Length: 419
Image (cartoon, rainbow, N blue to C red; front, side, top):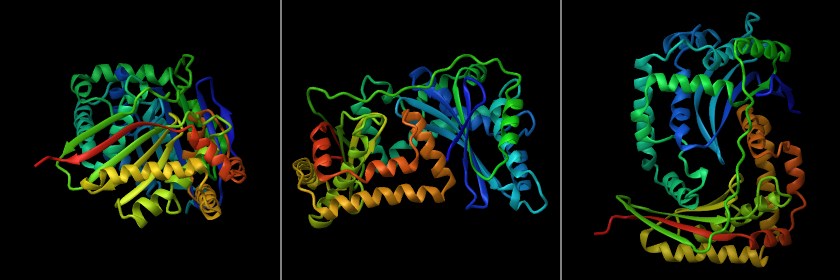
């Protein structure tokens, strides 16, 4: 399904044909290794680049330009996947065959995205820089406001101490404050020529036209050899890390971090995915049905796998007094999975939940792009059907065996202020 077209040694065009929707989506992703000294530059850059370029100079002009493409969408931001930071530029427009007057809408959207990345002015606008610096600092300071997300963020931070992964996606306030426009612009010029860049197009599009447009946009650049950042899974430590943080909250947040010793490229990876679904990944799981439903120990309780770092993360919202009970019951349910005490319904409904999630990806262009991008970052490059075929044969015995490898690493509890 996916067509991969190398543009040069650094840039790859990935085309996902889809004609069931009347839109075409485009995503451009610049891959950078997570580094403390780069993180803040990477976090602010997409927001500045999307504010204007040499041809379309301001947010007002961009808004008018998108309106002329019948309300096309365009956004930019920063993502973190394992030991990679990705600068993301994404857009959606009506496919050309549905354009009312035969307009080249996909080419128009691509021009905006390519221009934002490759056709910038000789310097960044100082007012735009100051606005986006302020916005970036506010985003960092606001992480703490969503306590559910914050608890997982802090748990992962504790698990990854000393590892590249503990570098935050949004960078550092102190680095944002010290940064200058000239430094950022100089970094941007180097970034463009020394990074792996993936461009994804999903929908109905003229592939040759897109390829030609990309080659034309980069014609003035001399690229340097770049390598794809690689993630390393975290290794088990000698003792469990227990962290309690106290803030002005009315509901406790419990985050428990386990290490799986399974990488996304391992043969056992999809056994782990099924095992997580049985344990805490959905409404059919043991955590949901026991910790939340049967024992009423949590407002929500679930788990997820971080495929890039080999983490399994439990996240629960609880009353402060229920910490020990919720923690103990979580480990009881993990032990049940390890012992193979899994019903036929649990294993089959977990596999069906995962397969249905993958199948629905076919109905969402950005979800499809995200799927293939995640595969690329993980170095696995499987397609959806391959993933489904790896899930289908997983047995209870497989699930129990893979969960035996799981070890407790960090227990993080966000509690209220003491009276």
